[in-house]
Length: 113
Length: 113
Image (cartoon, rainbow over all chains, first blue to last red; front, side, top):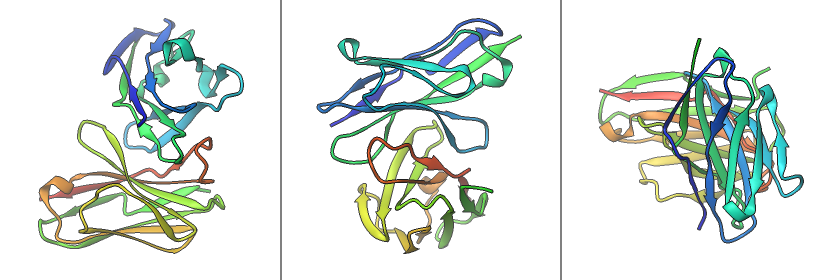
């Protein structure tokens, strides 16, 4: 069975500061990993995905994530936070003979001026 | 052009009623999904269909009945609504492979009075 753990249900940063959102996964097969963002009253939008190519994945809006097999992690980072980055972020895993996405519990990012 | 569209966006109704949510995708995808997001933002898959065939049914009460008239549409009918059904329901679509991202609609917020 696959699972995802997102450490920290809330993360607050100042505008211009580094954003780090943590995601650890558990999978008995090589995983496919995704980060999605959800703005208020909207659906989920794909930020980036890891599908066993490059371990450092670049996404939209300046976000990137690094797949570390030894740490079973796929943390999301952005060098400099913008006010518009305030949203809910979800890490998800798939790949266990199914296209079913298993989501983490989400991390709410707040950005202060 | 909206890729995955759901209607209605908001649905307020009383316990015991029957209601339907419609979903359409214009991405040419073969697979469509329904997810439930609870008040704590936790996302869980309910169903998936591939080319009108039910693939995933995640122990959802049989009051919930998905219907796929064609591969571009996946509707969700709910009988005898209960208070616990209050949630945001998201439709999604993909190419149906575990390394492919899913594209989400904006959600339907269902409130049971």
